[in-house]
Image (cartoon, rainbow over all chains, first blue to last red; front, side):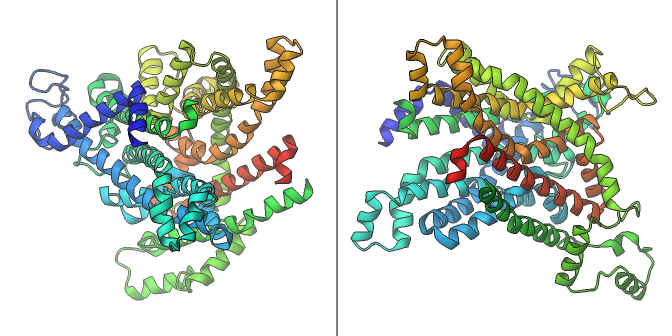
Length: 279
Length: 316
């Protein structure tokens, strides 16, 4: 079944392109210290605000740091926030969603009201408030995003478990005397893998966008650490926006392309693991 | 219908209470309080404690929560730590600008999104369909503030067609035309995400309805395709849009916060971000609470409207 799914995924050309792009970004993030022409923190006193040149391929920023090097190093921040925040969210969401969907009844009702409460807060607003309380840093952005975005995957997993628990193989597992825990983890979870992966990809895309927005407002990753979001902060000044596009266009495109690639991969996974979409 | 409405409304009460609880707990987790903000840095510990007592900050947290909840219910959202003015009128003065922005964005999303969704649905797997799908993905993947900067760069700074920021020209006539030229860019940016989702949703919904038996019946009666599509299929296909609107209220509001920041739009988002900068917790608490309440009420209204539009929902 996995081989068939892989074959279907490979037929989704945009998903494959997205996967290749993400692999490239991951390599860049891992090898940033090797491939970056300069240190992301070093100030070149001969080149403040200089346009792209052979010394600085993407130019330099307001205080003379190399934009390309900062862009490459920033991929580390954005990717780790995307991956870690989404892992936290999916872990919490899958655990609670599986419990709610499997047991139903009052436990389900309580958990669903809890997700309703968290979902009632506009996503970015609540993240802004919490980050401003705990203090902005890479760690706090990851924990806050992960800790507040789990209801999405929780709902998806719950819905999957609600239908899985009614199927014969669940009954069969129960008949041979499997415990609840074994049924939830060993028998049902592999069947819920598709929705979980889709939720994870959506979560990662959302986390990268949220980090960028938070850093843009000044409440995310703090300078001098480069992140794609905080590299755009300077563009809030109309003069810089008008005269120095090399400072703000590359990080913006980096966010756009990375998130787009993740969304294509997510769509590819959904198509590949959902046989109905091929009927 | 009344039973359905009451049952649906009843489950929002615990959610709203939970929202107040979470909001209050959050703000109390904050380092520092009004005294840190207001007191003279040279004040003695004794003076600080007297001040805390005067402000009621030394009572147990549940007492402060219950008092706060009681005040909220009577419309008293407290006083801003910064301006010492009551929060509610301050907030209400910022609300219309945000609602204006959200309404304009919704309008753009529907006026463009619904026809486009229907258009590509009847041309499934065509070139149009693929291009639209591709751009829908771009739409949900673009950071709104980046696209906002691009639009400002192109339309305000290079072409000089539109003002880069604000709601009205400073010292201008505050006319409707002036408002619209300021509104078009932020509204388009805010609409983008929702537009992309609407197109995908309408497309899927129309395709599903077109596959149903009653559509085949309509076709086999010999009705023209236009009539089948617009008179029979579309009515049912557009029903889920009501739910979608309810579900999208939170992200629309969150999007407005960022959009307002980019375009210096004087709404709730700017108000909240200023409050964060100034550690103005009564304001922050109120904005968070009011936005969450808007979301819960928005979902309730959407569900009730769906119940009115589609009687099947009321039975389940």
